[in-house]
Image (cartoon, rainbow, N blue to C red; front, side):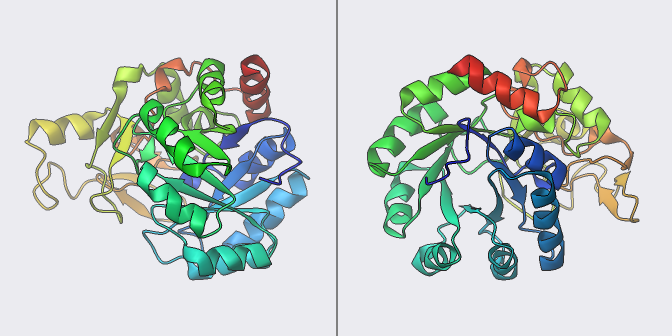
Length: 316
């Protein structure tokens, strides 16, 4: 992928508001690929975040854009800031966007949830493919297990490098996907549970305490992304909604409840898809706690660099 500064085949997933510049810089400085989640950020905020990452590392980093939403302004901000890597998910960027990224000197990675989507991404000029299995935390693009998808995606990608994602949390997981042919492993939940993550302390503690069976694939936290499947920790909100028969928005138990309040005054309702971050006040356990199927293997809250080195060195 022409990323010589990567010392380890580890990618930190773009874990929404939990991935601030301090986490991305820590991962990049330790030799991995750190990713900012930029879809819902204003261009000025993206410019500031990229500058903040650069102040903390000379390593490789980038920004993710979810094509389910308008992202042209965000893409422009990332390219103007000369972000080394741009990743696209939930859709195909198309040849014009890929060419625009390449003209700015950025490497392009495209996330897919099916093998059939690979050929289009490769034809458009993608430098790498991210294959996400259904085991992933957060919003889940796939419907099949990673192990089944990976072989098919590798066959379709040919010489184009493939990054594996979905429920990975340990060095054994990393070793397994590398042995299967992936060039790198992408992990999200493991990096939410780190010192530099902006996740709320209670959210981090829930991840450490959870078993893998506590991660559920659901549609309950719709927020601004209706019908977007997502994997979260089971909670009173999830359990009560399921017990009521999984009703549609407007008929869900406690529909108008505010479960979190942000320092800036934003009020987060019960079924919003925003995860709790540091500084939020309220019922964190009732909020959207994204977690992959490998959450049961997470039992500590170390610095991100320690996680990366531990994963990579042991896997190799």
